Amino acid sequence: MSLIVDIHKSLGDFQLDAAFEADAGVTCLLGASGCGKSYTLKCIAGIEKPDRGHIELDGVVLFDSEKKINLPPQQRHVGYLFQNYALFPNMTVRQNILCGLHGERDRAKREQKLREILRMMRLEGLEKHKPAQLSGGQQQRAALARILVSEPKLLMLDEPFSALDAHLRDSLKVELRDMLHDFGRAVLMVTHDRSEAYNMSSRIALMDQGKLLTIKDTKQLFADPGSVPAAVLTGCKNIAAAEKLDAHTVLVPSWGIRLQTAQEVRDGLCAVGLRAHYFHPNAPQNRWPVVFKEEMEEPFETILQFRYAGQDPDSPPVWWRLAKDKRPQAFPAELGISPANVLLLYD
Image 1 (cartoon, rainbow, N blue to C red):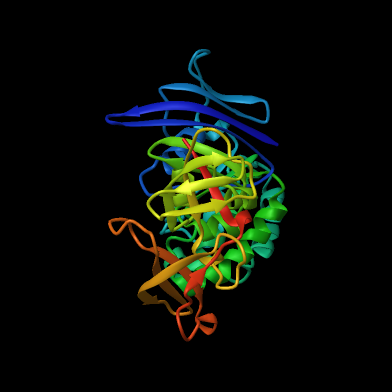
Image 2: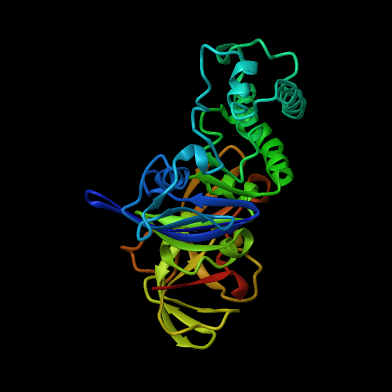
C-alpha cells in the first residue's frame, strides 16, 4: 500500500507545494493552522484540483497534470473523515452507514457488512439514532463506520479530535490508534497538535506556510528535527543562533556559552535547540552558571525561566520545564544538559 503525492497549487499569495510518499501505517501532516494540511487532503480526495503535479495510490494514477488525468472522488477509493464528521443529520446511523455501501447491489451482503461494521465500531443498539442523539465519540465512530464499510485503499482524517472535549479526546486517542493500526493500509491524519501527532503516528510530515519541510519517523523527528521551523513545530522552546567551532563544539553568542554535542556538527549550522525538559542541576557537561528570572505554573508542571550568567540581556530567557514534585526548593546556581540533547539546526 503506497501513496505518492507531488503537487503545486497557487491560491493568491499562498503557494502550496507538497511532495511526499506514505506507506501502510499512520502518517501525520503536522503544522500550524492555515499551512495547507487540509487542502492537501482535499487534493488527494479529488475535492480540489492542483494546478500541476501527480498523485498516485497503489499504482493507480489519481491525478496527473501532464497526462490530463483527474479521477473524480468516487473513483479514487479514498475515505475522508472531515473535522465535523459530515454525517447526514436527517438520517439514522443505519442510513448513514448504508450510504457507504451504495455500490453493493446484493441486499444480503449489504446487511452483513452493516452488521459487521456496527459490531466493530461498537454502535449496536444505536442503529435508529440520528446524529444529534449521539455523543461526540459515537458520531466519530459512526462517521468512520460509513467510511470503512466501503473498504477504502486510503483513509484520511482531518483533525479527528477537534470537535471533542478534552476528556473525550484523550479517551478516544488510544481507541482510534488501535483501530487505525488494524486498518492495515495507509492513513493520513491532519493535526496541529504535536502531542497528538506523536501519539498517533509512525511518521510525521511537517508543513509550514504551504511547504513540506521534512518527513521522518516520529521519534526520529523529535530527537533530531534538523531545522529551526521543525524544532519550533515539535515544541522546542529554547532556540538560539549558533556557530560551529569544531566537530563537536558550538558557540551560542546570545547565551554567552559553548556547548559540546554528541552529533557531529556539519557545515551550514545556523542554530541550536535545547528542549525545556532536559536541563539538570547535576548534569556534568554543558554546565554553566544561571540566574533565575521567573516562574510559571501549569496544572502538573512548573516552568522556571532563567538566563545564563553571560547572556545577552535583550535575548529571551531560557525555559526549564519540570514536574511539580521535582521543583528544587532553591534555584540551582548552575544547570547542565547532556550533549545528546543539543539539537543541531541547519539552514
